[in-house]
Amino acid sequence: MFFYLIDVFGTMAFAISGVLTAINKKMDPFGVFVIAFVTAVGGGTLRDVLIGRSPVGWMRDLNYVYVIIAGFFLAVIFRKKLDKLRTSLFFFDTIGLGVFTLIGLEKGLEINLHPVICVALGTMTACFGGVTRDILCNEIPVIFRKEIYATICILGGCVFFLLKALHVPDGLLYILTSGVIIATRLMAVVFKWSLPPLSRD
Image 1 (tube, rainbow, N blue to C red):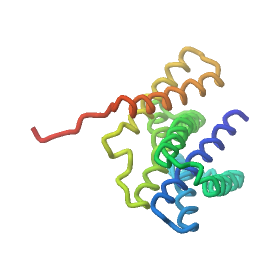
Image 2: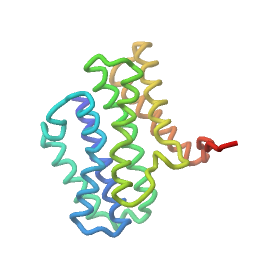
Image 3: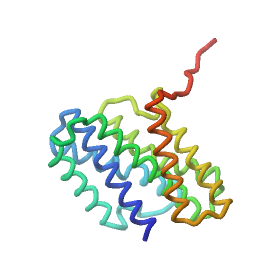
Image 4: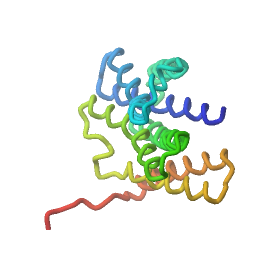
């Protein structure tokens, strides 16, 4: 139940992130909803396709669709109170990043994949929805910009397996893993941490 609740929470966070991005781009209500939807389920859909899980998660459980719809209406109704949209977008995107990395890791473990593959799966689950959102909004995806993004998911995956090897209880394991990802991204932005660009020299 705990795992299901954080999955729903992550879906809500990414849906709101999509709404805020689309509002910034001055899209109509239908466009805003589409962006919210693909942001929320894009990573999970790719994950399920890769591991051969069909139908994909949100098609099996309509609660995810209802959560996305709820996130859409909440973000639209309270958009004027979210006066600092860039800050709000970053906040919800960061929560989604932490939660969805964890979900991808667990899905990989459920089918006994190697830890390295689980980390890759977690990273794709967390990042692909945001990549799709940014592409549809005519933005360079965050994952390809100077800001570290996917690297944080990989770090979170390593922390997850380290704590698991230390036999940390599942509930605490989930909280600590997501917390490390969220805290690291917050610090990366505050202290302007980034990976150095590659050059020909």
